[in-house]
Length: 320
Image 1 (cartoon, rainbow, N blue to C red):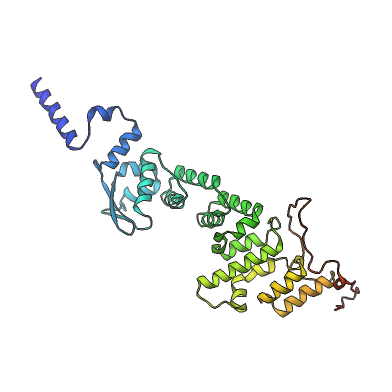
Image 2 (image 1 turned 90 degrees about the vertical axis):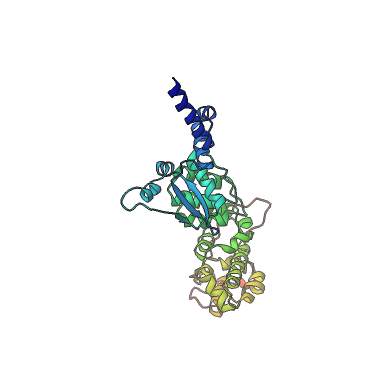
């Protein structure tokens, strides 16, 4: 009995040295005990250097391997990593949130950390965390962040989120295209938006948004803003703007003066406006499927029903 008492006393001393209380430990949930081990660095067997500050964070291979096949590959087998593991691409706060999820399925997702958590979830194949992040992004889409979320969805190949973001932009075209985030879209994303028949916005606003985007791209790339550089930035986007649908005064005073169209293109659009049977390709005169209220405005025709719009002989000759 005396020897058993001594062994029990020795065990209690050992657990106290580790900061562990037997009674409290036995009454905690699995998640609580896992976090206790992590936060108190008990029996850790892997060390990470995280973020630009290369801060040391310790963890347990068992927990990491049990939640991620990426970590399993990293720590098991003949090619297993040894020594300190460097993770420079996220900061310490985000990595600690990630570990908390791995250990306890517990995470606080916010607008300022969701993209970083999604990055780690995909990088280390923690699908449950990825689902949490995507659900958050789907729920909190708005005009101010939808363009950023669209780019991130494309980067992460999150097709469901990408489709949701595109749909939101189509349905809220004006507010989305007026947001500062629109200026940071990639050229391919702007092209996807502008070419859609379902974009709910007036054509004047489409042109203004595209023109503003091109100017911003020039500024970001530190190139002079002129007709040549603006046209270069816009590329195929120009052909997706429905110029024949614009109000004639807006076309003359704004579009022509912007210099984004060549003289030949201006003449092509003008001739089509006067004679509807004159082809306007590569441009389009197809109205977008804009859902308008009965009391609202109507889609503009470049020259409309004015003296400019005299009938044109079937021969295709152009009347000025």
